[in-house]
Amino acid sequence: MQIDYQIKYSKRKTLNITVERDRQIVVHAPENLSEEKIKSIVLSKKDWIMSKLLHTQKYPIVSDAKEFVSGETLMYLGKNYKLSILDNDIDGVEFDQQFKISSNNQIIANELFKKWYKAKAIEKIQPIAVEYSENLGVRFNECKISDMRYRWGSCTTKNNLNFNWRIIKAPLFVIRYIVVHELIHLMESNHTPKFWNVLSIQVPDYQKAKNWLKKNGHLLEVDF
Image 1: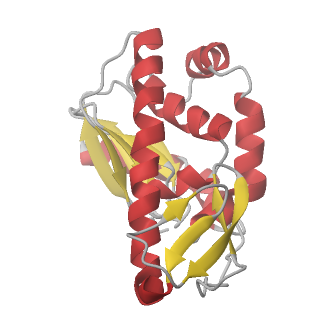
Image 2: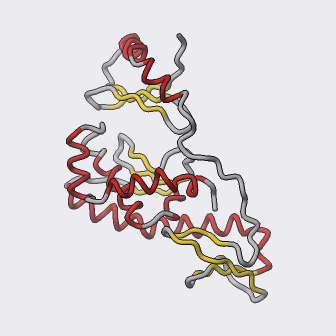
Image 3: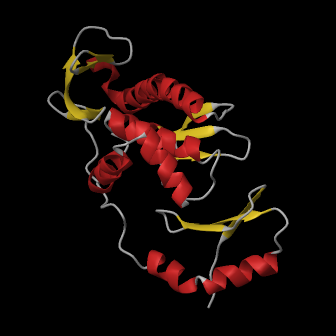
């Protein structure tokens, strides 16, 4: 049986296999583990891997693209707000319990909103990362907002945090869960009992956040 996978080496002590939402198989392995040993472990987990690969997509695909016309709604921090297209000049996107853009900018609305969402994402996420890194006693180098498609967040071997800008559409308690989840990976690389115990102390309602993502994650998947 042929299983295609990507190996990511690090200073970690244990091997971990993940099947991403795009069905890519990623093996996180210790630096001193041979490729033959990794292959052997992967093959031993083939039944589990196949069950993940053959599972129906975690989230349904939402194909309705925004037209950016007055009356449409866009999601921000877990709520939907109406969009108004105005004739007067507006520099970028304005938000005051509703979104406003200039009719002159409708043609570039997608670009303007992506820029606005990314700015809001770092504005909300950075303070959460700082607060909880102090609570956990861990340090991160950079907190970045990226365009990753199949993950909400990740941390690197260089202690950088990366977050999908689309999570700014989720409620704050969900954003907090995602941020703290990645911070704990700086101290506990796998989803061990210790990992979930620390998470439950820092974010007592983390299960509520997980359930929200399971039910509504497809709404975040699309750009707007």
